[in-house]
Length: 340
Image (cartoon, rainbow, N blue to C red; front, side):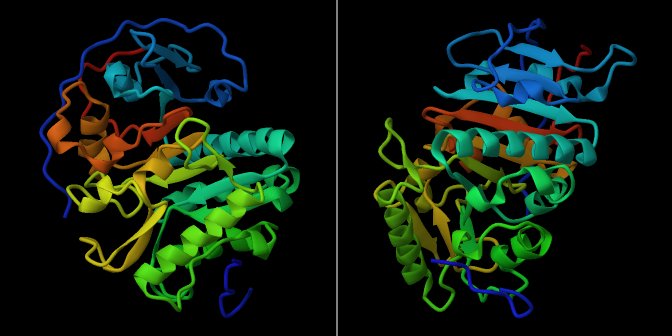
């Protein structure tokens, strides 16, 4: 299901201040590259969250000059981790974040192309696409094996592909038009269908790609296992088109579903379901700005309530590695700041 070509080419909630426990600081043992690619990234304050081991370990490639305000990240609770690995990276600037996100993505591309001959990447909309801009520059423009990439969307607005609200158009303008991924390996929705029809059509396409071995299957969950999901989060804690308190959060029988009453316009969208998101091999959750600090605090803080989990809190990998890419503003509500 190749993407149709564009004409020229083929109210955030109020949060209270979050109280998080202070965790001891130590340097973790070396982790093999295949186990944790984030260990190669710098400069950032780094946390590794693991359900199997506590307390967590903080690692930073900074020299201890002045105490950076980004050290709020050391207050994160290990209780946020699921059975997979989870980590947090805090950058001084969005520029540094973009540099490391490109390196992270390129290394995963190399890993999966070597291991399975393909790299399945899931995109979201919003500011994420801007954060991918370093991939369209040297050395990645020349070194990444773009011909092996297969690109999907975790959610899409049911609008024409040249519409300003289209996640496809956003990705095409800011990323896809600048790299050499074969058009037949970019899987956009059929925008001629209804929301329900587009969701069914997209799921049918995914099942075909699973059957031919392009998309892997999780041995743990039985759902499709994408190599990398590059996700963003809204100020209300929503991910994909899964919004707080919405019934779609509990859909398990579908890989792709639809929504006609999105609290954020446009109202009609399709979206991956949580079981598919949670079956990924790797997730990079890219969150920047003070406007999202409340949701970050709730997601990564120690105070948890199963009755009011945000969608981002429900994203927990069954067998994979989940990494937050954030800036200082996004973690500004985390208390008990300390320096490394």
